[in-house]
Length: 306
Image 1 (spheres, rainbow, N blue to C red):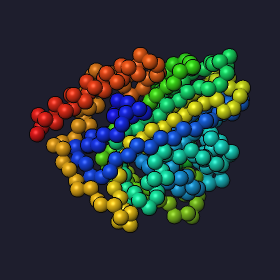
Image 2 (cartoon, rainbow, N blue to C red; image 1 turned 45 degrees about the horizontal axis):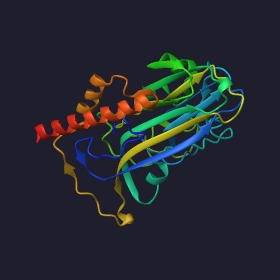
Image 3 (tube, rainbow, N blue to C red; image 1 turned 30 degrees about the horizontal axis):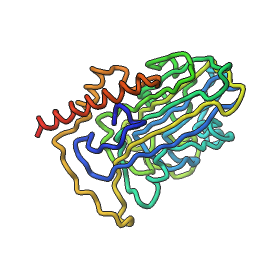
């Protein structure tokens, strides 16, 4: 599931225990406006906050701009994290694919098992030009509460850059030792609007969870029709029900140790580029074969521990 969260079915137990139910959530958005040559979208999948509101927390940010050097100031009057990427200025209509479920009455809290984000250009073939930067685990310190990075800054921190094509691009979230922490819908990595300039009671910042980001940045595009960019999000969660839901709590199961380090270590050694790729038939088949080999490796490691 870590190797192909965009397509794989949900498998619990990556952290060595099963403490809740598992589910997978997907969402997709079209973005882009004519004349916007640069932009970015970043996502922090370790969190699953509720839908964005001013003064609240958010784990998905984005911007469109005519120049890749532009930065944005995050204030209550002009909250950059609710910019015009998917809707009108001041309305950020995109949200984590699981935000509606986690903020409902059934789910008490949740933790992320795997996450994947994809990007595909859907505009005119004659307009295909520009660069794409794959953003992997971008640190939250680079985001800040008062300003967002520019597209050029994200390119300088990208692990991979390539020319825009007509295929689909994927980037996957790399879990860490703090990803096992359960969190509710009132936690997140970034506040909408500068917290120092609003009297709104701000939600809790759960620092126990590492607030890192994945996503894409682009520049040099020639978008003459809008929208022209398709973004899709997939996220697998392990969640625990509320008492009011009427669901039985899952009896914790210990699987004999976490397989997270072993799994990601195997991927790093055998598929160094596993967390980002340009998708085509060959890479899709290769991913499935790698997944089968990885499943066998993890099973052997668990049998040795037990």
